[in-house]
Length: 67
Image 1 (cartoon, rainbow, N blue to C red):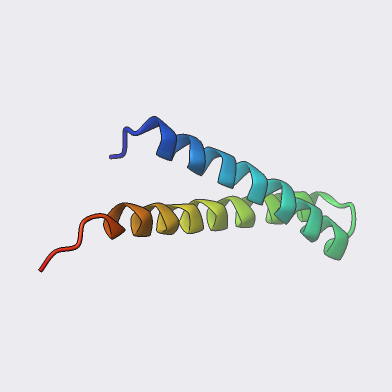
Image 2: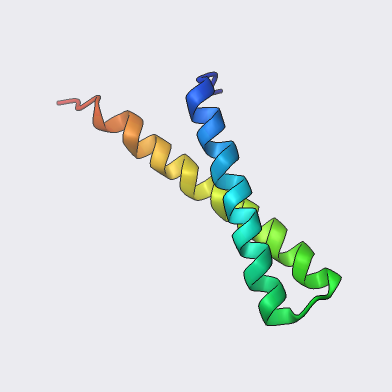
């Protein structure tokens, strides 16, 4: 479990930005229907959490070179 406030805030911001961008893209493709909002929001939040977690993992591990 991660308790660093800076990491958690970074993931929150990344998730919100991805949610907004994904919703806008999805609505522009599917039209202004509820499916566009739902699919865009859920898919982009999952992508944002995954990508920001990957970035945090690489950033934290780059300072700890073993071997």
